[in-house]
Length: 75
Image 1: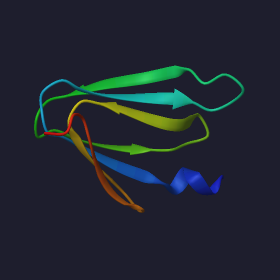
Image 2: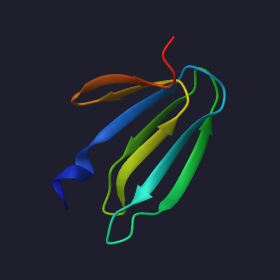
Image 3: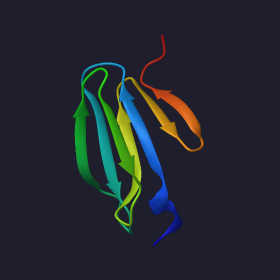
């Protein structure tokens, strides 16, 4: 098991329609999964042998073991 497989992130939508997209690992980075979240919904995601990156579109709070950040447009 790779060390990054233990890494989880928490995404909390701050508006309706936040998109969370998983990107593949390997020589070609591709989208492999997406979810839509509505305001207040929370998703817990994990980096795995297949997922090398996670993209968030829309206003959301993202928490990791390294800290937290907000996505979306700034007011």
